[in-house]
Image (tube, rainbow, N blue to C red):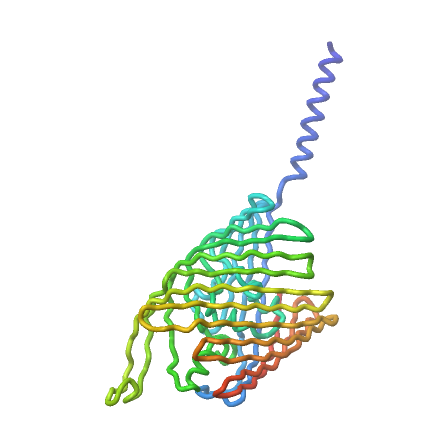
Length: 372
């Protein structure tokens, strides 16, 4: 009987010790990761009309990124990026929490970057190969940078992988927000409109609801393809236009008028990435369909393709872009070098050439990025 009791006690002790050991191995230690960067940028353009200077230097971006994982399946994220002239709301890029329910379903709530464009997720200067973002991302004509809402996303597979992201919420209009040392990037449409005799249009900040989604397939790191759509509620926008004397009709006075329009809009697009060793080719095409009871509005499209090849710490790249807004069409050619001697430092230099029937613009951008 004593041996029987001893056996039971020994078994219970072994069970408790084993359970405690297993529990100790599975206890999650909260993880905190804080990183940041600052990008100083030099811009030069030949003979810009309406600008006091053709060159300038500015801290174009300065960001801090905080990741906190209190649990193995819960990530809290916050990203704040300073840009000259932006409001606090515009600079608060991300503040969200994501919970992993299972390997195929994650739920994200808060403010987060939209996954519609792969390039949009490379919005921050240290992870973007080029010194300037594609017009698709910088001008926000087809979708905003981020959204306040909820996302259901996930993936399945290893070598062959299927991934999806369905989300909805509220966004703030970010159309034509200017960036760069001179504030020229993001202002291209109004600049070329002015050269072609059209009045610039300024859209005020407004909030709107939208739902959107993207699905994609990939094979290892070689091929990645996806499609997406963005469908906002009708946008009711007040904007001002200034008219010269006799412009509206003979004898009309000079002045400013406020117009209210309701725009129905839906955008959709596709993206592709091909990669072999250190050579990478990416591209995207997006189209926006617009309609309004007040006036005819042309559809517009954008397209870009970028080729890069990393050689040790240097990555040369070339990008072609075409922007067609119906009444206005222009192209941009970009060629540059990305040099990353250390993790903390990145140097970028690139040449830009805008092509428009009213004028061709040549520019130079140099950037130094320090990360920590």
